[in-house]
Length: 206
Image (cartoon, rainbow, N blue to C red; front, side):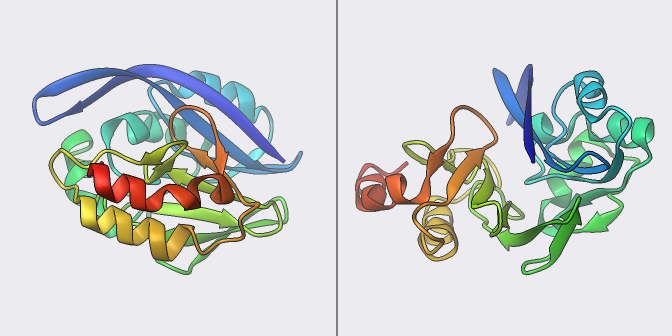
């Protein structure tokens, strides 16, 4: 099963602050769950988890609005935090005295409640950005790499537009077209809905 929690807070980078709503995704069953992107406030996430065991907390990338509840959630539910090592500079801005518990690696698999997610390294929005593909679920959790209507933002530090385009082209749009893409903000879409628009995004440059 897939469950959604939405929290609100501030995304801060390069000296600017932005009010944002974040999607937090729970994947698992009645006994255990995996949490994707612990954002802003751990309390509604803890409430959604209930009495289930938390296998782990996955950060799709290191921006503060995707990890700023990770430590408090980990301490509350006794779960490890996973992050791709290329995003450690961003993590260290939020948690200078705490390190992630484990590293995400391209091709690695994570499992909760019999559901398997495969890690796909999709850099561009950040160097260590990752998506999580659940083949049996027909879902890919895209973080801030792919949204309805285009790629994630690349106009700030640690980001690169050509890189995110290559990630989307070769790592996400090659998934089955019926695959649902569930992002870190806003509404979901499908790979098939977004694939025809790649050239438009390249032409507009964002």
